[in-house]
Length: 313
Image 1 (cartoon, rainbow, N blue to C red):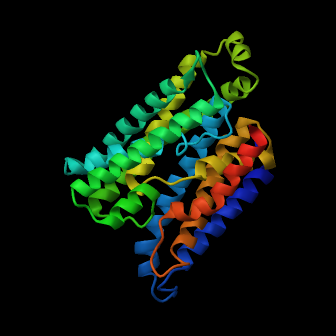
Image 2: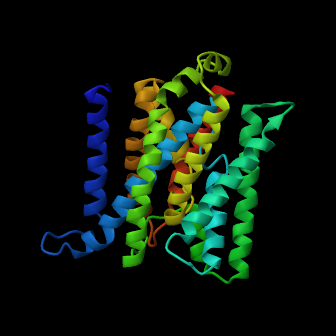
């Protein structure tokens, strides 16, 4: 069992993030008028918990699977591929409420396939080749997304928020229903990732040991890649691509609570949700207009990424 203290600290942190996100904003807070906090802030809190939790969980799963401290959905290009797919979904005119998530999933999965194959150098995958392949795909799909936006004459603000993330989604009745369905669909996928903590622990020794103990590493890799792509596609279809949450959160958890994935996976979900809510609060408070979330995450994430490069490579 995870020690209750581990849960307690992170649950309290999440509750603090929720209270601050609900109470703080340009229009203030008044007990006599809760319409604005409930209608505008509560949906973005729920979306932030969903998105941040998934980013933390997927980042921890991918780092554990690949034994690479520099991978996350953003550096591997999955988020950019999902953004590309989401744009294609928009160009089809939202044929249904699930058009954008489906196209985002296809884009994320295709990107993961390309990155995985590009990373093979002389018959094996190296840490550097994997990150470089992800960065290449990220730049490629980001450029294509920008090109598509220019051709379709979408507003520049929409381009920025799609590529750099936001939680200020206006939930119409149709969009709210689709979000609820997507959350329900994502739960068994997240449970699947949680359930692989033993395999990830064994894999942390090395691949040969894992295979000698009966773990099909190729199947495990394929399944976790697919599940991760699916979850990131769901997040990107609503929030756009948010950087560095999936990279930093698992490292913080491992530093504090150790490398056991039985702790790392669920606690990364909690910390990811909290961190995204705090980041969103900063993004909508420090400037006259709301900033894209990745502007804030980059300010903290880039130094952390440089630290990992110096320490791990």
